[in-house]
Image 1: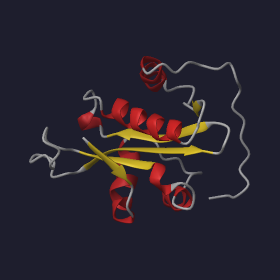
Image 2: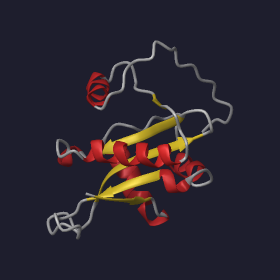
Image 3: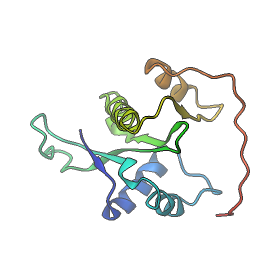
Amino acid sequence: MRIRSFQRSDTDAVVSLWEACGLTRPWNDPLRDIERKLTVQPELFLVGEAAAPDGTAAPDDGGALVATLMAGYEGHRGWLNYLAVDPAHRGRGFGRLLVSEAETQLEALGCPKVNLQVRADNSAAMRFYETLGYAADGSVSMGKRIIPD
């Protein structure tokens, strides 16, 4: 997989991937989420393209977008959002590669700790993050929508 920053031309493929992965929700407009991310650290919006071992586009996938991850750092903690790997490409380490790249970039910014949120019913995602060294903090996630989508 080749990792690069998101480009506007990726929008349709990203939204389709998020839908295929079950990440979209009626209260979060994915197009608005993309536009919001592009205003803050757009270089930390990572996408992965299927690639051959030599780094060129894989002939069977044609360089298709197969993974995404939004990362950010607000000066205290880093955050990971929208990790998605095409179901047909899971088990190849693409999610692990994206998280590692995001952690490397966040560390370069001076980020001491990375947080993420997983829906309480998504045990597969929790197991995945645990294999990467993440653990439940014992914190309660709270939210308040101030701009309705």
